[in-house]
Amino acid sequence: MRFMPPTLDYLSPLPQPSRVQDCLQFLLRIIRNERVRRWAMGATCVLGLLAVAGVVSSSVSKGECERRTARSLGKGPFYVLPEHAAESLPIFHAAGIWPKQAATIPDAVPWGGIKHAHSPWPFIVEVDYAGGTYRQAGRGERRRFFCLFGHVFEIGESMRWTS
Image 1 (cartoon, helix red, strand yellow):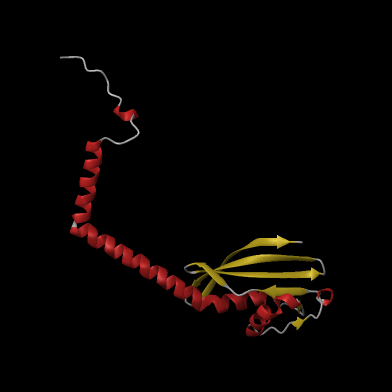
Image 2: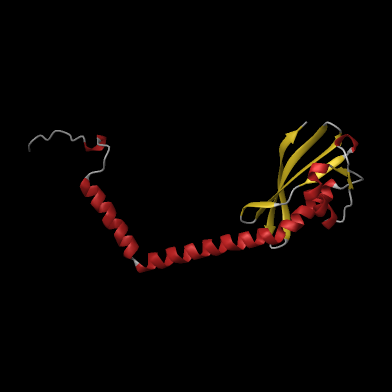
């Protein structure tokens, strides 16, 4: 037997041509396999339908998420700040809450406001809201809900700002 020096193929940054050809042939065999192709097509269709169902579920449930958040803010009499009145008042009224609209900011104590719900992901709805008990004190938060075609489950809250 003749002595063969070790090769340095494993240090080469590019794969060897035979390895690339082997990988391509393996992938072509997988793609040409009818069972694998049917399974991949079915999985893609199921994921697509699930995403569409999630978007529809979120859009159907946005109103309930807004009303539930408004009810949590509307405990007792409070004011809506002038800059938030256009967006907040219809949401509060839909929840059966009738806050007073403040003419100026110093008059608005305690205060609250809510924004329209938005959906960052299928089946997930977020509602931004804020409230305060003093003139210069308050907090703003984002409440997240898992929505299943009108059935709403609160996931949690995250603090956005505080003063």
